[in-house]
Image 1 (tube, helix red, strand yellow):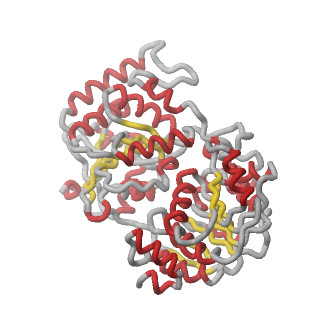
Image 2 (cartoon, one colour):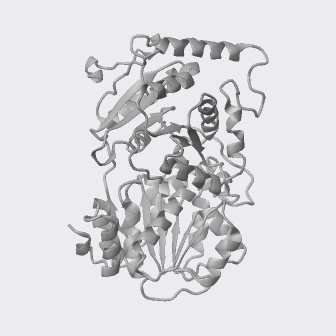
Image 3 (cartoon, helix red, strand yellow):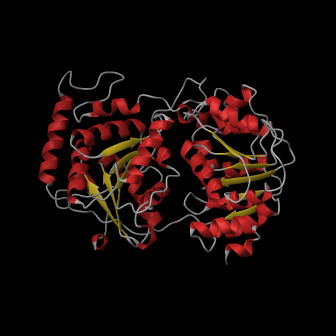
Length: 477
């Protein structure tokens, strides 16, 4: 099937053709016709499946007729993070360049006055994170009673981050007669109940979750003691021919610590997590894309929606707690038939997550041998010994500095409102999830500092006894 078979306008088809795409992805093929018909859509698809274009392309045609009024957007797209919102905005700019549509992006870390100016002129498409949108609503800068099309994207991530109470409030301000498009990477019973609250007789479209990894990606597990993780990663970076790489941590504070360690030891690295200002995050990402920064240490939430081609390596400094995140992380390398490498560093406490990952990918992951492991073990022992000495541990509220974590302090000073502060109106139904979330309203005061992110690599002959996990001999072949 070709894009021309989906019923899109010549203007949109021309823009799509100029981007180099010829055939729609499965989610685009299934969703676009229903969106053009004006139906509500319940979609199950992960980031990276072409989901964004499945609603942006038909929305451009739907909005082609009509005129925007001041402070009254004609359509609304809600995204959980700034990066995803910015990615959607890029889609509208690329695919809507032959359409006369106006757009505004409301995310934290950017000037209120600039956003207000766009809203005053009237916009056809409003893309926003929930907290920043409510800030504008409460200031009387935007009215939502003119919205005809609503998109709730990455709904499962919205729930994980505690944004659902804000989403519920936003939806209550919209007209009941509207088209609603609801997308989630997973469709649990809780997700389906949530969708039932917002959708009316929807058409369901789904793309099965990926359960396999690209054959072009070389994978491996590195088994180490906890104190050996940072020296093992440095040795691995020296051993591999790394052009550029994502390095994933499970928590934001560990991004800072690891970035400081790498920087101290002379590695060209940058960090990306939710507590950074928007301007700093965009600057760091631009440097990584241009090659000015070689290593990007990041959390899953911050990296979600980032699309960088030709990434040679992915390193999972932490094993992801969710198996699907392993697929998502290593899928950033080995694209379009290119060779890629994905290695995961595993400690004793993280082995419990390996079983789920190996079941999902359908095979046991091989354990690799690291050259110079003796040096790593020696350095790890020294680190462990220093931490045991009285007075050498970190004070309350301070990061450990033995690996140079302090050098990353200046890079993370500003607060990112849209991922840092939590809703002040959580419903009881979602109170448990809201406790884990972050939001972008400047009036909020509580934030989660430990967002989960990802995966693992191996020792060879010097594997400690606690790593005697049941791996078949053929696993390493």
